[in-house]
Image (cartoon, rainbow, N blue to C red):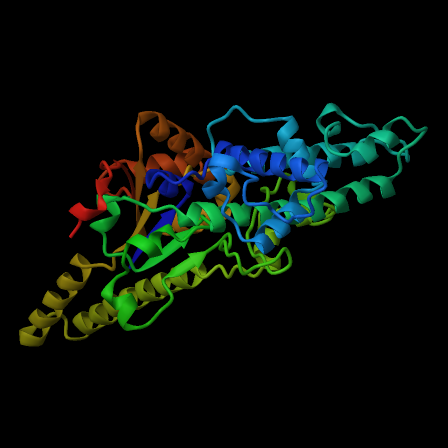
Length: 405
């Protein structure tokens, strides 16, 4: 079985604008349009000359733009991100990092006192004007923190819908002119996508085995972008990793709605990759049982005669051809926010992992992140010696699509 894991670097390799900064630039333009229309009393009538020379770039159906503006308007998270713009040239991890810092900040404040008097630290000051009013009142009780939490959950759902519209309405309509020869050369059975886009299915094929058995080869572990969705039906996951210690994580669940594992369950993204892992484990179990049976047959006839020679030949052949399953990781930073999924795959002793890297800087970051994901000892064991199960491979240059077979 060949499994391909793709992260946002896969889309970036195809020249798609899916960086944090790309989305923020687009969002600021839409935000300016919304402000202009409100200042001029335009109720989403969208006059033809509204966008001037850039009109084609904003060619969006009226109902979609109405939905977009409803999600943008008075959105606490959007206002926060615009206030604390990131200079990083990163992907959605920047969102996750900022959200995590804010949530942990509020959580710390909630649990910092033994009485009902709470304090606000600097990280929260941009989050809510309403909350700032409470800061200067004589006391802030837990109910007010819960109000802020509920407001942040509601506006996170709205932010995710805005991101979905950006991807489905803008990014997915861009013509892609090149493909990866690395991916093109692999006979892929299954694709585990951390992306919301459908880049792989547009450009690449799956194995004949997968096609023949009519299996769904895709697991969009963080959901898929679609204009058909609404804020309610959207299944995109944009959350944070578990930050609480073991003693607290199952007890203090006030902010569980922000965590990725909760969102995956709540939005029913599927986790189909676990079925693939079970299939691999089952195949290996059957392989070991075959060896055991052949060994019993050999012991029974004591290896004598024609049957004994036949058995030992079969036994040698079995041992020389164990099941081999390959995991290919392309465009994923191996960030700790996806630790649980990556560990399930990489630490499976029946899987051999190839991690593609763009350049030496990216390789360094991937190695560092992988230490956080599987630990230093596992990384050393799996990358060295004849029994290694992890290799790093530099990506080949992308090729124009017309050059592919």
